[in-house]
Image (cartoon, rainbow, N blue to C red; front, top):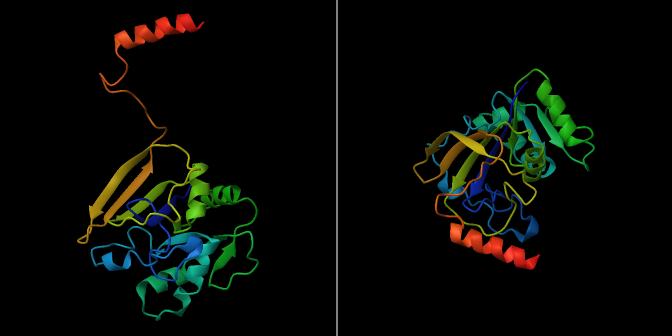
Length: 222
């Protein structure tokens, strides 16, 4: 069983829309595209977090695929990220596309959850999601994502597409590694860790007197 890994650049308030360019994704009147550019430096290991797709197969939502399709094939032949992304096999989730023009790209057929489940069962490289917020939310709700590489930038954007939306499945995560870049970007990796474990700190709940009062009032209500 191969792993499905999701990697995302996010703001401190969890927004991942258009990190790399002003015109990357202006949908929803988003006007802060390119918010991560000023923080990029050589201490960031793009390859280690899967952002360059090296030795992995990509899984992309339609919007992210179209952004990449319009950019990476036209970069210089010696650009390292362009080399790996252009060469990687790309599985694309789309209800509207019928043809894909970027090298080595295939459409996921039918229900995306079933399609990804089948891909994970096949031999080959691990599967890598980059961007693709809607797709991440769908696959997270189905418990299909095995690891999250989340790079948190010290900015607050206010609105935009989020890594986890209102449909997210409540679940615990376990931190397996982290580093901080010279510009204050927290580069963290998490794996699923079962259900959320809840509890109450000693002294934080109702006192015995309050519980007795509630019990007495309940008798009167009945």
